[in-house]
Image (cartoon, rainbow, N blue to C red; front, side):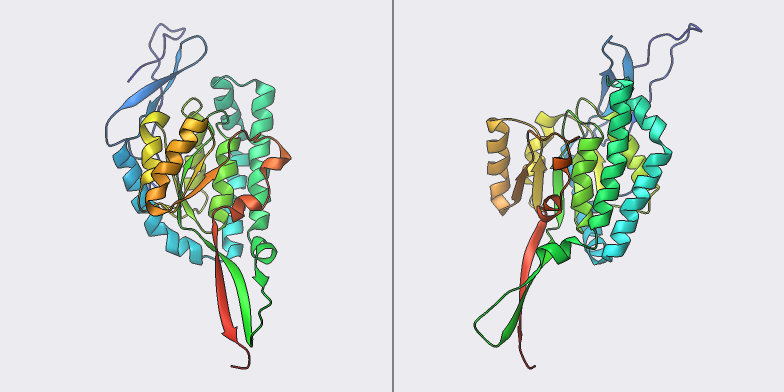
Length: 294
């Protein structure tokens, strides 16, 4: 692991090692590998875990175990937990601003990104008990039955978070996924990873059950195929890449007919990046028939 350059006192300062987040814990990567994150001048900012395929498999096991209980939680409770995440993020606002600045953002841009991230959590918390009313339906049928369509969470969602939005893009994908009762495994931005692991600390202190959100850091080229092909993942979300990436994700996901959700070319700071259809993306429609008069 790398150390920072000498401080004014002449000693080498110790760079923080950012761990991954699996099943409500902060383990080191099982591979023991790290990469150094540097600023524009080449100075070492931090050591970041280089997550492995084994780390991803462990995270999927944790997400699968947590999913049934999380799906059964009331909409009110899920909304309250998202609101609690926003409260905790607000309390650590200055830390996240400083981390974004450390990774190259201007102070003004970092301030706006953190504020927008808090607001986005509040936005999706408000939809927790409303999206069913919007997307569910009573269907007209030509028989003596009631026919209802309601939404159910798709299950475990793997997620390749935006590379160019270390905090807001991450939250904009996690929040609508978990508010609908899914669990997720997220690969953080490769170039802006610090806020993702710090956000895991926020989740850890916000009543989010272990395994609901799992966050890995590492190289996209190494892990994208695993995120798309794992047979116990029900949907995959990706936010970057051209036609080659899109095709490889689609082909890998086809083995278990995994739902593929592309969110490329999205301006995460825009109001158009927050809407209830982001919740709908990771839901399945369940239709129930019930005879009239019984």
